[in-house]
Image 1 (tube, rainbow, N blue to C red):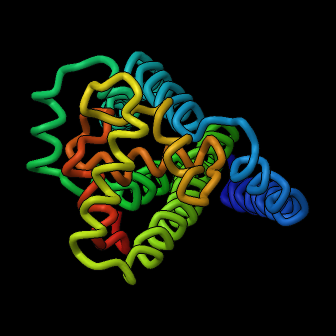
Image 2 (cartoon, rainbow, N blue to C red):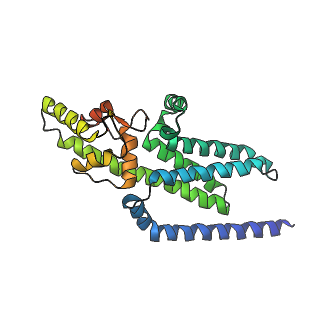
Image 3 (cartoon, helix red, strand yellow):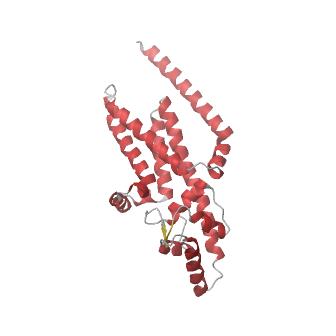
Length: 249
C-alpha cells in the first residue's frame, strides 16, 4: 500500500471517529439531563449500575487476555480484568465477606473506600477504554465515565442532605443533642441489632425531613458506613450527627 493511500485511510478513519464523537456529544447534550434525572430520582440502583460496569470491564479484560491475535494488548487487558474484579468487590464486599481484602484496600488504597475516590476510579477506567478508540471501547468507556460522574453527583447530593441535618442540630445543647441522637438510633433500630441497615436507614432519614432516592440512599449508606461493614453502627451514626466533615466522602 502506497504512502498516499495510507494517509488517505488514516484521514478517513479520523473523520469517521470525529463524526462518531460529535454525534455522541450531541446525544449526551440532548438526553444527558434526562438520564441524570432518572438516575437521581428513579428506582435504578447506583450500586447495580456500577456493578454492571465492573462485570463488563472484567469480561472485556478476560477476552482481551485470551485474544492471541493481539498479544500486545494482553497487559492492558490484564489490568482491565483486575480493575473489573476490584470494582465488583467494592460494590459487593459487605455481602460476600472476605473482609481481610477490604482491610488491605482500606490500608493501601484508602481513596477507593470513599465515594469520591471510587467515582474518580470509575472515570479513570472509562478514560482507558476511550483511549482504545474502538467502537466497543468508546461505548464501554462512556458507560464507565457515566458511572463515575453519576456516583460523584448523586454522592454530593446525598452528602448535602446529610449535612443539612447536622446544621439543624447545631442549636441544641450538647446534653440534649446526645439524648436526641441515642433516642433516634434506638427508635429506628427496630430489630435491636445495634446497627442500622439499608431497610431502617430510609425511615430514619425521612423522620429527619429527608426523603432520599434509591441512588442517594446507596450513597448515604456508603458515606455513613465508615468501616465498610454494610451497616451503620451507633458510633458512626453519632459521629455524623455530631458534625463529621462530609466534604470528602
